[in-house]
Image 1 (cartoon, rainbow, N blue to C red):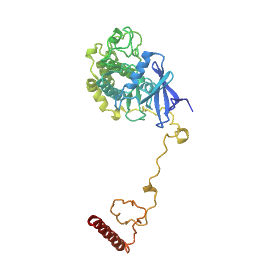
Image 2 (image 1 turned 30 degrees about the vertical axis):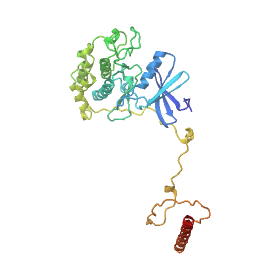
Image 3 (image 1 turned 135 degrees about the horizontal axis):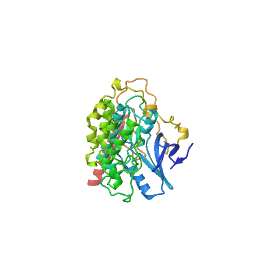
Image 4 (image 1 turned 45 degrees about the vertical axis):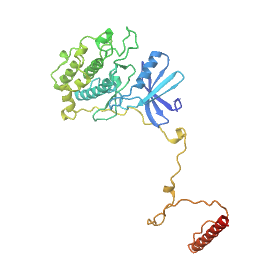
Length: 366
């Protein structure tokens, strides 16, 4: 058994590492399922603030990975999120020789734009769009399902920056040129980064990571193949050197070249043998023997379900409810159930009542 963090999360194995910390596969021993968890040491106040900011981003969208819970022990903190088991777009490209077919590029671009549309509508700029942050569900040879992750350096578009003026935040190669000149975070930066990712998926070439990028010229890359050149049309629109000329996520979703390619996902002429497998080992044993004892015992079985049933299903109706009468004198016997003595008891009580009435009259007028 691995380390159990905060008495709840068993660390199984590390699955990724980056500037914000290490991502682990963990067993949530309370919920009984396997999740991903990002862990960070509290060594830098600004880094910790970004960590808290990431776990606070709650965008409920099918193409966004949303943090679930967090915990802290001594100088370490972690937050959990769903484990996306199909790896990343980066891994998919490596398994396919560095590039992806146009129909895959189109569907992955379409889903990333859907995620960015939701993120930008929430007033957030992601600032770190790259192949490693585009995760995939294990859909096999079927249509891929992408989920955007890692909001560690995301920032509200209307919030003052936490960094120094000369500090550039993001992954070199995917940042737009204006970001190198101190421009404030803007959704157009995410669109530019996605355009660079699309170009990388098509050509297999990683962007240069030194200094501000030159304008992207897709002209020399055109080869006359309709699907290939349609992807370049998307790249050209997303990577305009002037941020004001870049379309929003919503506008780029409607780009004719993108819509045409997405609609042709099932076209036999574009078929391929690319698959997205489950990259992680089977879920470890989470039987009751290795989970902590429940804080409360289970409720007892219902009497209605455990009591033997009568031999016949035809039961008499229950008697009408009557108020409960509790005798206040010990010398008054409880009423008998036998119907034979009921009239006698009534006459006795009537006689006692008449005698009492006569005594009262005698005392009153006597």
